[in-house]
Structures are given as C-alpha cells and as structure tokens.
Image 1 (cartoon, rainbow, N blue to C red):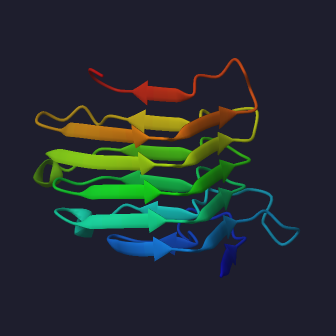
Image 2: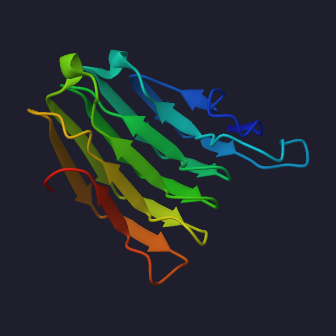
Length: 168
C-alpha cells in the first residue's frame, strides 16, 4: 500500500500517530507541481502527542520518505517505547529521523527509541541522518538502542548523528 501527500504543510502530515502499529507501508510526503512554493516542513510520519505516554508505537517494514523535512519526526513522552524496525527512511530535504524528548514537565521521564535493521538516509545537501534534540528538562532520560542500523548521507562532511541540548 502506498500513501502519499503533497501539501508540504506541517499541519497535514501523511500520518499523525500516537501509538499502535504502522506496518508494510510506503509513506511519502512528496513535492509535486501542485505543492506550494513555500512549505512549512511536512513529515511523512509525525508523533507529537501526549497519548504516546506509557505506550508503544511500532513502525515496521516501511519505506518512508519526505521531500520537505524528516520522514519521521517524533516528540517522545515518559514511559513510551517507540520501535522502528526493518524500515528505510529517506529525506531529500533534511535529516532522515528527528526525535526530541518531552518539553512538558508532566511527560518527562524515561523515553525509549529502538532502531532495528533500518537505513536512515539524508539524501540531500543539508541534513544529518539522525537528529536528536534535548529539551533540557530535569529527570528526562532518553534511551536509544540501535541494532543493525545504517546511517547514510550524500554529504561526507556531515555528522551522521547530531545531538543538540544538554549532556549526552
């Protein structure tokens, strides 16, 4: 199944999901002739909701691409465990995966991300393969597990992983 959107608008991502399962899909935020010339950074998959707290999200066996921003952008929450497994994430505009911890005190705590057998490809001139941002909240713990995951960039001078925030 192929699901596409071409708005380029941050408010209209192809999928906005909190928890559950995305499996066996091709998901594309695509620039076309119908896309406005000024866009606000559409993710193909976006998770930025408090429903993710104390929940699980699995993205499995998917090809996810964005011509506007990261194919997957996430704001994690306390008690969550997000797993991206057997996926290919490609951005022609920016980073391939963007994640941050919660900036809301009520949802700060242990937050898990597992990348298992994935490719993160920044197929452009500006992005890192993986961008992690800390909101610098006390008691925020962000655990990342990477298994058999490849980070790629068309720019050999770019860092594959960029961390922005407090202590790493």
